[in-house]
Amino acid sequence: MPKFVDAAIRRQEVVEAVFRIVAADGLERASLREVADEAELAVGSVRHYFASSDELLAHSFGVVVDRVVGRLASADERLAGTRPGTPEHHQGVLTLLGEFLPLDEERAVDACVWMAFKNAARTKPFLAREADRSHRAVAAIVGRLVMELSSAVDTETGAPMDQQRLVTEAERLLATLDGLTMHALLQPEWMTAQMCSDVLESHLTGLGSYAGSH
Image: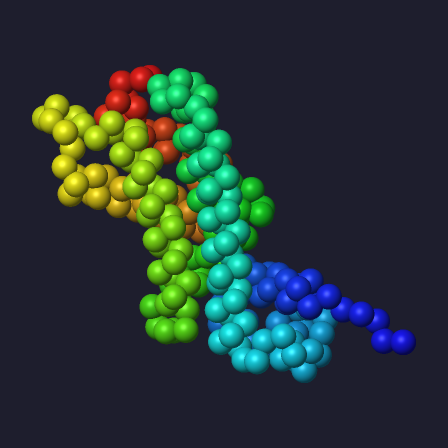
């Protein structure tokens, strides 16, 4: 009697093979044949679950987006249970933002894969949908966080921070996170987890009431 294979499990095994290839050698090597070899499957078996390389890559991008955004959402929910200005809230903010960064092996792989797919989406239209979804999800969390930390007050004038300033601060934080991620992936000996945390601390002290609470 043939052995039953759970389709969801097998699809996940194939996706994990994609992640290992991308983390080790880049997205260019993630062909159906290479993925099949990495997953120790026949190419025909992979095609049973993914009709084309494009379908496999788009699905894999979606999986890593779900994984990262899921961690962010969980950290954001925990943060919502703390009061701004307290040590618990401070640590919660760092924990939330740390979910963007390659601070351990799992997050390093996810960050590497995430960045590779985001970059590839510039020239591969079939990845554009997931790239847009990932950006919107992250921007929503960062935007809400910046508004909370700044208390919607412009620290230069004391007046309520206008919408454009809030957008600018959110983009500045996003750029900091992207830069830290890339630096940590390329120079892990220098940009350690502690260094990433120190840079985040320095950046966040510039955000209005958050700076005033420490």
